[in-house]
Each structure stands twice: as structure tokens, then as C-alpha cells.
Amino acid sequence: MLVTLLTTIHVAVAIFMILVVLFQSGNSGGVGAAFGGGNSQGVMGATGGQSLLGKITYIAAAIFMVTTLTLTVMQGGSGSTGLRDKLKAETSSNAEVAPTEGEVQPVKTEPTTDTSN
Image (cartoon, rainbow, N blue to C red; front, side, top):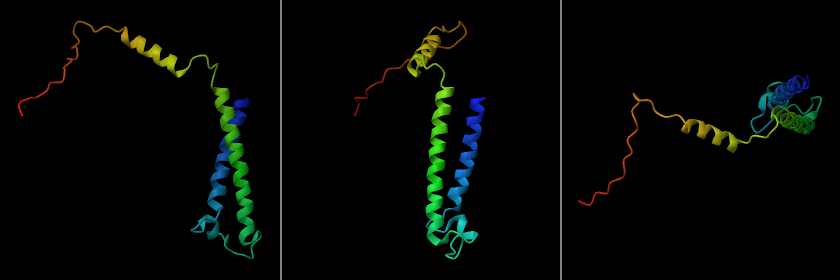
């Protein structure tokens, strides 16, 4: 239940952050300029909207990072088996497989040195 709630919040914040970043006016104006974002007589003014959108972006990014870390910890499991242990177990299980009678063995060749120069 909690994982579903956090995943829903995580996706909603991600979509919201995309929209907020798109509405910020950058060097080329952004999407916000297409809807009158460059108007100094607008509701938030020419610079007021930028600082408000900047604050909203920071808050959304913080919420996104917290939900990311929380979901990672919750989905991580017990943590008793690390990557190194999993790789050793996989390598040992692959090493135990012996070739059958019909399989072709790879030929090991040693590098040769050519001294006929």
C-alpha cells in the first residue's frame, strides 16, 4: 500500500517537474514565453515568475529525490547478499557445467613472436 502511494507521488512529481521546467524561461524563452511569460505586466511580472518557478522546481526536485531514495530502500530487500556474492555464485554455477561429448572445446592458442624481420 505504501509503495503504491509513494510510486504515485513519485510519478506525479516527475510529471509536474517536467512541466515546471518547461515553463521556465531560459536563454531562448522556453515554453513560458509562448504563453506570454515574457510580459512584464503579467501576473507575476518579468522576474517574479522566474524566482517562483525556481523555488517550485527546487521543492519538486527535493520531493523527487526523497521518494526515489525511499522507494529504493523499500524495494532493496534484506541486503544480505551483495553483488560480489551473487557474481561468485553465478561464476561457480557456470564453472560446474562440463561440456558434453558432442560439444566442441575452444582451442587455446599462445601468441607467437615473429623474428623474421
